[in-house]
Length: 208
Image 1 (cartoon, rainbow, N blue to C red):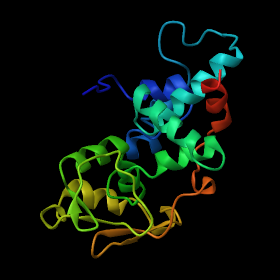
Image 2 (image 1 turned 90 degrees about the horizontal axis):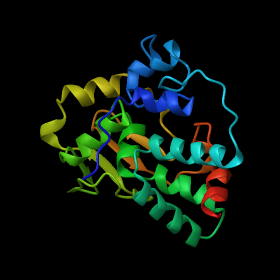
Image 3 (image 1 turned 90 degrees about the vertical axis):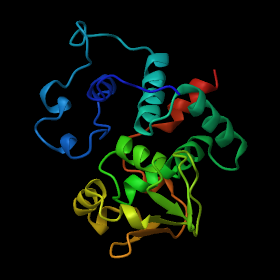
């Protein structure tokens, strides 16, 4: 299985925006974007004229990295979004937002997307009462996500939960902290996504 093994801080610097791939570190002065707010590499600080294709490509790469997918998987999401009713760009983001690992992160059970993915793969959560270890599993309206009993004392989960307030959890999700259980009361909407994303640029890129 393909994995990105380089520094994830380089990804934020390359896209020129915080992707919050390291949790709390991204909010501190240690964040690479605070210290070196320019692309990595020897030519990182050089001024470059970016063409239309380059702008579209960077937007696609940013969203792909934000949700932790690789190219083949991302293209699959786009193809599915294109077949759905509605606006293709918005459909794409809502499909990505519904990923199991992203929901675990949004509920505050993990400090970063990488940690959420690892916890999911190690079967620390139940979806509707059964173990699911597929990070790309799509969470639907009415689904319940809860921490398995043996993992409720996990330091990684309890520390992550302590750093996320109820006001930070999207409106379509809710959490019972005592039971360590989250519920999807609906489906994500475009307004729930706070990251600066121009999804139309991705549609234009794949439409060429």
